[in-house]
Amino acid sequence: MDARCADTVFYNGRIMTFEHEKKVVRAIAAAEGRIIAVGSDADIRKSAPRGADKLDLGGKTVVPGFIDSHTHFLQMGVDALSVDLFSTKSMAEALTLLETAANRTPEGEWVIGANYRDSNWTDGRFITRRDLDEICPKHPVVAHRICGHLSSVNSKGIDAACITAKTPGAAVTSTGELTGVVTEAGVAVLRAATAPNRQKKMKGLRIAIRKAHSLGVTSVQDNGAQGDFSIYREAELKNRLKIRVWFNTPSSGLDSLTSIGVTSGFGSDWLRLGGVKIFCDGALGARTAALAEPFADDPDNKGMLIHERSKMEELAQAANDAGIQLVIHAIGDEGIEVALSSIESALERNKRKDHRHRIEHLELPRQSHIDRMRKHKVIASMQPNFVGEWSGIDGMYTERLGPERACRNNPFKDILRAKVRLVFGSDCMPFSPLYGIRSAVNATYPCQRLTADEAFHSYTREAAFASFEEHLKGTISVGKAADFVILSDDPFKNETALDSISVVKTVLAGEVVFDRSTRRGSS
Image 1: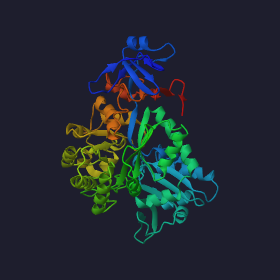
Image 2: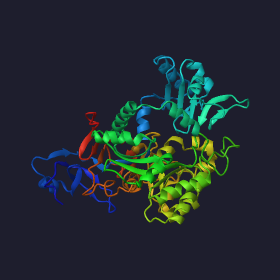
Image 3: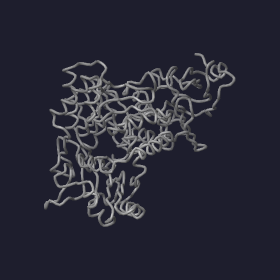
């Protein structure tokens, strides 16, 4: 232990290192963005050079920087430039916000709404073409549901995006009239029609980074669009990428990666190419997740598979053979079955000891799925905030799945007991690790409920493992990045503190990038 080269010392804290021995220390010494020593106040301060900056942690609890293992980070920033519908309590309120925005927008230009949550409305149903036509007859309008798997568009928008009854995912009435509700592939059509330019994406990235710092997030694993990596790369070259990014490429880019021989982990400590993101099914909220039995509130519907089984196997084998991590979106039990079978098929053909393939969301696994994931060392990448948003007797999960399936979905505790690696992300619904941790600790059903220690580990140490970066981050250890978070209270001594706990400071590469007391951020 030697702090003689430190440029910054953080002392007088209760620092949870999250190393396997659960070591707690009082001080950290950092130099050039890395941790060079941890230990007691006396040892660290005594060894530190006279010119080192010294920050008193005020006895606060310190944890490693949060790693959001499943985000749409850049899209979240861009969505912040749209009409935010997240907090609306009714459809009428959402429509009023869109109408107000239209009144400020030149006629004929798109009005874009983001993150509407019909499950939180008293009059919960999807927005339709007629709803939007009534309030915005002179603008193309689209409102994206929070899940990203369903959008609502008006008549002007239908024309502008060239959507017809033959467009995949476009819902029609019994007479063949477009309802304005589109799912999956239809959403992609609307996203393409309203795609932001590069300048808007760069602005969105700055917004997203500031938000991340304020919530203690120092790393994200982003599931972005095909061209988003270049946005991150430009920001890195300009020294503006103040967050560490593991970028999962959409499956449409797999051939490009394999043709140049790039494997997961290529890049720098700030930006790395991650896995290949493959959609197996849709979402429960949009009623497109692939289920073995029908939706409780739509008895003729079992959801959908995005790809045929043979195509899923083909994609999985190509990525696995090329040394690229599989990041497979699978929510319903039937979707999980197809995703897991595809991974098993790929590994049978080409066994890899340290593949770290992942299933994203994994909301309705069977016990047999969990057992097979343990056998093949497949990572469970899940979103505890979903439980906070939609669990409970009157929640969206019960509406979509019925009480029997709802009480066994998102079984975080069962997954850990089975010794399957569990990592947490937000999917930006909402983007907040502390909210996700609270949701897991206070979960409705026993099969979901974790301790604070377990939940924090899934947002830090385990998340670093999921991106092959346990050498760089995830714990407060000598040699790792000086990324950590100072909390307002100690959730490990008293888990009820989670209800009011907040981020006081965020430190990234040894620099304070967020300070709540001064509202200061460096991004």
